[in-house]
Image (cartoon, rainbow, N blue to C red; front, side, top):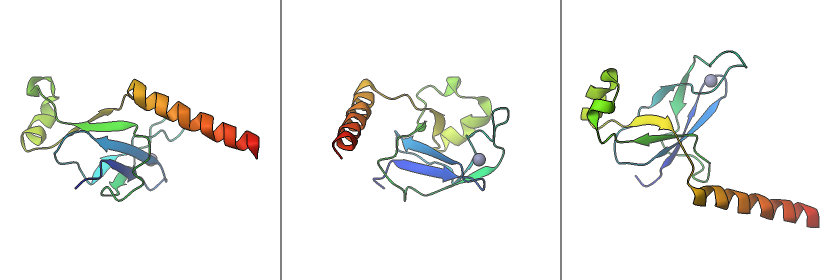
Length: 114
Ligand SMILES: [Zn+2]
């Protein structure tokens, strides 16, 4: 499996974009990570696209293999021992941010020329 970007879509139509950083197992269902409105988080379950999605999407969360099991929440340790990955907020690298900015600048330039 070479695709790394995956989406999870809930019945409310929220899409959560994830990237897989390490080899391991990711769940096919996930509690929706989006907000329902300003006050409440969405409580629906979101379904995996099984990596059959646009691979150029920008991830909001990342799946990683924890290196120190002691730092993993107790409820997740068994899952990690069995090869499961853990989800955390994805932080973009400087290069990724630069690439996104370059792409936006190109778009703006194109629109200005139209
Ligand atoms: Zn949702």
